[in-house]
Structure formats: C-alpha cells, structure tokens
Image (cartoon, one colour):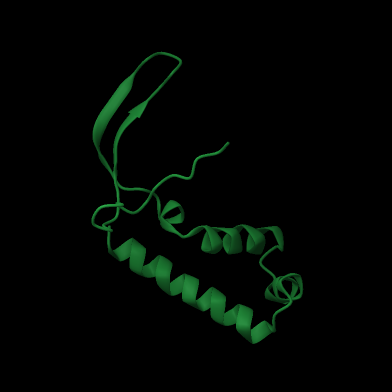
Length: 92
C-alpha cells in the first residue's frame, strides 16, 4: 500500500516541511528544514492533471477528449493550475 505524503498539518492546516532525510543504504541522515517541491504541494487531482497533460504531449485538445470536457473548460483548468503554481512558488 502506498502512503500519501502529507502536505498539510492535520492540527492547524499549515503547510508541512521536511525536517530530515535518511539513506537506508548507508544510514546517513540529513536534518534541516526543507520546503517540499511545488509539484508535491499540489492536490492529487491537480497532479494527475499535470501527469495526464504531459502524457498527452501538452495537447489541450487531446486532454479535452480524454476528460470528456470542452476545450475551453480544460484551458480554464490549466489556467487555474498555472495560477496556483505561481502562488505556491511565491509562498516559499
């Protein structure tokens, strides 16, 4: 079973950061405070959209067909995602 990486604090709803990284091979542990990459801070549905968009070679026409939505609807979804990514990058 794959566990989903938590990105929001269950207690206060703030964004989570990574505090340590560990290598099982050599037992090295690195501690600090690291921001999660922007793509990991997206919701699952948003990340799925990005992955599907890449698989469709960036074609909104193919995405619209795959999602059974109109081209303008998919374009609006992409624009919303672009705006969210821009905001997440500024919040770092």
